[in-house]
Amino acid sequence: MIKILKKIIKPFIPPIFFSDVRRELINYFLHNKKITHLIKYEKNFYKRHAFINKAISKYNDCKYLEIGVADNNVFNSIPLKIQDKFGVDPSEGGNYRMTSNEFFQKHENIKFDVIFIDGLHHYEQCQEDCINAMSALNKNGIILFHDFLPRSYFEENVPRKQINWTGNVWKVAVELMNSKNVDFKICNIDMGVGILKLKNGFEYKMMPELKDMNYTNFLEFYKNFPLINSEDALDFISQD
Image (cartoon, rainbow, N blue to C red):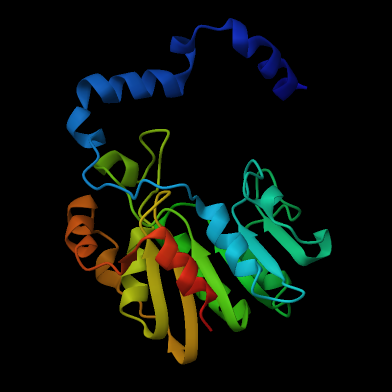
């Protein structure tokens, strides 16, 4: 009932009264250097949906898992039968109302061909989601990630400081770059879309030293990230 009332009265409330609007204005006037974009994405006609659906198209009877569903923006674009797509979110969206940790514990016998990770944008949780996803992936499956390329200090900061937010999950990208027997790329578009394929004998490389690193450190790692453009990403996904 409260949510319905909020939707009704929201159009009549001046934007300045919303906390997120006030925060964005304060950032603009007082923290401009922290919100300035220091890296740029490819300008093209693709979003994460395109790469996820390209991956799904590779498999007959594909089983799809999405971690972090929210408003169903991606989940509703997945062209699979309901019994073959699993959307996990503790708050809203999808068809499994629980945390990702709970889901993997309760459904450890289900294997997936395509997994998309866009859950809590904290390094430690994304790391857990990645490791669990690797165990839940069918042979020759694909794991995709969102938010590997933060453009500014505040976009990367944990806790959250602005509307557009990747958090510090880029640290998982660094660990994947250093992992054993994986094929890993990052498409330089739509907040950074990670694409991971596993080889025989894969091993995830944990790097505890990353925990206290910040956006300044990210800019150094970024120089060696395995970046590719959108068309190369589509080709990479298609390759066996």
